[in-house]
Length: 467
Image (cartoon, rainbow, N blue to C red):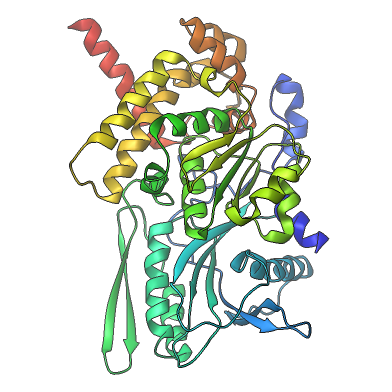
């Protein structure tokens, strides 16, 4: 159990670039958090088009033990991988041993039932090299008569696209109610299909007995940075003011604990909070649903963002943990805070973001999920545009093409004292350091969407000056 715990507690605490270019040698020996894509692509779980949709589909079922308790076990795996190298085999074994804990994070106290509402949730696994895999889960009750135990269909993928994988799980659940045998050809067809580019669609042909051949269309959102998020889940449970307090804690890389009973609520809300940080990426311990056996994660002295079921609240509060922000998603309130959250963000920008979020909340127009994502994301992207959008002007390029970020000049260029005070803290975070390290590698911006917003902001400022 200890090795499984370590597998998920790994925190990406790369030393920053504060000491300047004398750290360059260390950087070269320190592997990147994730495999690098082309310039302009995001360095996280968002990968280029064309690769496999998923690595594994596993079914996790509850098996009765000799003491009467139920323990989750993998009962089906597709595909079975052969001829792996020793290191790959060990990594796969650790992965497959840990997955059941996250499919049934709520312990061993299960009993057969006749009714069970299907739920969709996800978890994140962090590898030795810092790369992340996502587990997309559908917990359901298989068809049949009498009492049965729920089972979980879990798709493991390097690709972050919650909406798209939810649709895939809908198709898996539909086939499960017919027969397990019908799932295999569908997943095989999916595995043979290339992952579509943003805004594009891939069509999967799938045969269902008595229904014939179906064409299933899977479309990625146009904005790739929003495809693993549902901001509506956050807005339904928290006021805009509390969302800003959470954002303020996250942007300074503090310890955040989210509480809810439903696994789907936990995973959706934590993914949404992490997405508010775009174009930056949370680079520390990140466990959207903490299994019961790993609750002592909250004792970690380093930054973390974790989700815990409400039933464990008393146990969490009894833990000898350091200062943390604890958010109750059931009641929509903050039950423990550091105390300075109101003062972290510059007040003028904080009020502007609050106005923007309140305008959305008070808007009677019915928005689609994509529209909500765009509206919310825009408020936070604009915050970063105005705070750090001038970063590229303070990268000094050498003749060999490598860049050096001029941190002091960057901070000094900010006219507002309150803005400068915030930025001086923000530049010390891992997320900013990782972002700058990528920016120093190429003159081509690594975040095309963010760069587009920076350009638009400067054009608007120029237009206002000229008019």
